[in-house]
Amino acid sequence: MAKIALISVYDEFCIGMRYVASYMSRHGHPATIINLKRYNKMERDSAPKDIEDGYLTQVCPRGEVYLDYSSDITPNEEALLFDILAKGDFDFVGFSVPSYHAHVAHKYTEEIRQRFGLPVIWGGVHATVAAADCITSADYVAVGEGEELFLELIELLEAGGNPIERPVDGLWVRRPGQEPVVHPTRMPPKELDELPFPQYDPLNEYLIEDDRLYHNEPLVFSQLHWTYKTVTGRGCPYFCSFCVWSTIKRDMPETKKLRRRTPLNAIEELVAVRKLNPQIMMIEFEDDIFTVQKGWLEEFAPLYRERVGLPFWCYTYPAFVNDENLAILKDMGIAYITMGVQSGSDRINYEVFERRTERKRVLAAMELIAKHDILANYDIITNNPYETDEDRMQTLTLLANIPGRFNLHMGKLAWFPGTTISVRAATENKLRAADEKLYRFWNALYLMAQLRLATEEQLVAMTRDEHLREDPEILWSVLKRFDEMTEMEREMHQLRVQNEQLRGEVQTLQSRYEALSGRRVVKVGTRVADSFKSLVG
Image (cartoon, rainbow, N blue to C red; front, side, top):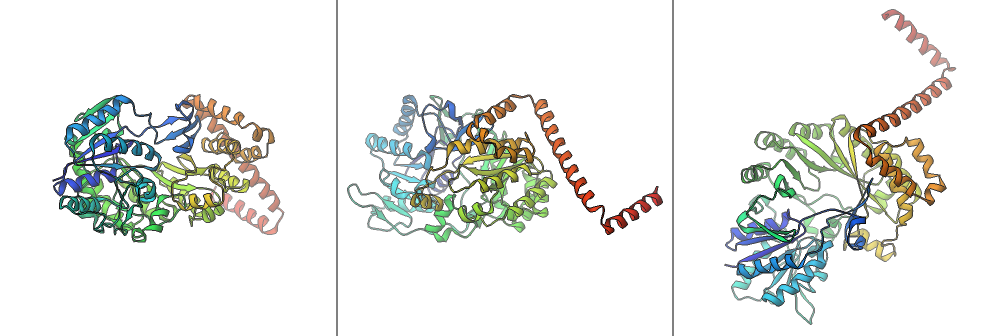
């Protein structure tokens, strides 16, 4: 029996690592989860150091916000981590490593090796897309899904075997001073129902945050206390160039096929976790596209409504937005839906992002979501060095015409290691080549379109204003003032803008009518309509 410590960096949800923990525990190797700091956000102006190239950046009316950010780990928090490891009598340490926090895992891997002499394995997204970077510190790197791989490695070591000599599919093995050993890729698990549910065991879990240790107590300050994230399947049918799936499916073709748990298995997980934590108020389905299989959704929906019944959100894709799917989600009690739009330009979506969805299809999906009165979050990627003003104008006019209730999630283009667009940009010397001042101008207009601070006609006119282009902070001062308004003041302003837009549409229709009124067919149609009105009173 091997005792394992699994460390998650800045992510207390760590779904993948929780699956590994439960799988190892089921097979007689108890796993303890250590959450080293929580996921957090911080406004760019408040960040203690320049980290623009190291974090996701969301653009909001109040400015730019770093996502997936937390303050540095303090000396006291380091001491708490080492104290857990010292007292736990562990045989193995694992890290779940996101790309933006690889530097943290590098630092503490070396510390753990020096202090405790324990072997360290890395897994997670960064380990899968950038194994060559990971193996410079880690003793082992798990490429791909790690449940079966980790168990095979532990059993091999316990039997006295050597992973350098005996292949463990999907494993990289570090050899200081020499090239690492790279074993063949591993086929991912096919039957997801056979995996145990993710581990949520308060007796075997710790959180280090705010200079203190939390253990076996309600984390009322954490999203984990009231939100539950789950996945009902693994994989995505698309190859978007900015997404890590473009890397994974290129290097591991066996992951191309979408694998889905049975509806009953997914429901049983949610029922079990509600018994464990009755405070849960929201379910978040982290599947890349939750609505990808209509038949699966039709079977899942009544089970969810009857046995779970909590508000939820999920991801969709324009190609899978239709009346039937939306009606099912509405009946289930959906709180909101998230859909990637990324750009209003077909050229950018097709040629740069490799998304084969036309603008007109995106707008049709938005119309359907509005028709079903579902709150939507629409994702837009900005600060893209491949865009022209024509592409940006297409995005602006799209945003000005979004129907229904919606929020805009606008993020700067992120250069994840190994993604198709990152590789292309590196070869074409485009990495981080976007003009910041230019995008301060366009991003402000995008947000004004979202908030309905101006009509489409006014926004288009602003794009030609050289004074605003030269000093985009004028627009940002307007956004700041709007952000500081009361809710009633905002609604009044938006109603005025909508009223002005409607007047413009009426004038356009009237002009078209006047242009047509001299035609014979229109004269006849008008007389018929007048006669009908007189008949019906």
